[in-house]
Image (cartoon, rainbow, N blue to C red; front, side):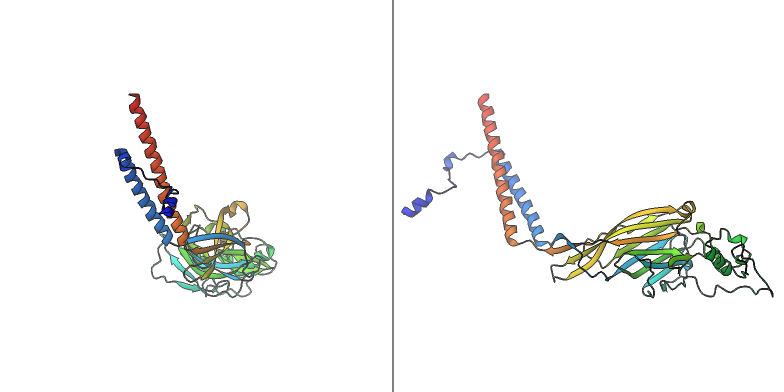
Length: 378
């Protein structure tokens, strides 16, 4: 019994006699509240323990620089006919990506934004300069020895509207009013635009872009390369007739992952007038996301974008359209899913129980002594 008696001397939890225990109503209330608090925190901690958590860290992007990135887009233009829209992608050096032919579609919309009756989704070829429907270049037979004026752009003959446009293009001029050009009055393209003016177009699909950064845009006219510069041929249609009001239903880079931020989704931009250039300057951050279940790693991208709106008629430069200018960050954000260890869970539970019990004991002791002092003063 000597050893047990010796150990008893080290008991930190000395027990008072039952005759000296005093129970109060306030103490009972504190005890009930403490129990409810411990139970609530226990449930909260347990739920947190069984759920997956995410750890975030920063790294230098180690993926190859020549990696191609998929951009997914779904953009509705409220007042721009499908026949006059083209999709183009340029890399950071200004070179256009050729032979991109997959997964780009256009759907005609009525003035209310609904799918036009008897319309269907049409698959397009990007950058093939065939956005204007075929068989529109038929012209009325010309009289013998006819020599149309080039309106000062050339000393030769311009017998068609296209020849007048080409002459103006070589001079670097723009045609301000097609009504003043005799060859363009019966131009089938102008007639088509007049017939479909007021229609909208929904452009959706995906395309591959270079990781070096660049320019993805959807704009009216035919995209062409001229003297190492990318330009759009508007077929002489005045830029103030192109209304670029649009809704970005979806725009993202790379594959999806949990809680991916898509800052431009469902954004609506309305223009009162035509001839507006909408530019989005985006910083794209590479993302690595690792799932805890199978350790599968997904490489994707998130971005932040700044929207700039420019009136071409006032600025005298630019092109009406939707322009997304992007640049890739050298910093990668890595997200890793993980479960909390059982040891940490046990420590947190002990901290909850001990902390609540200690605070409750202090409150009860303070209240009991305060009431006792007040009674003595009386």
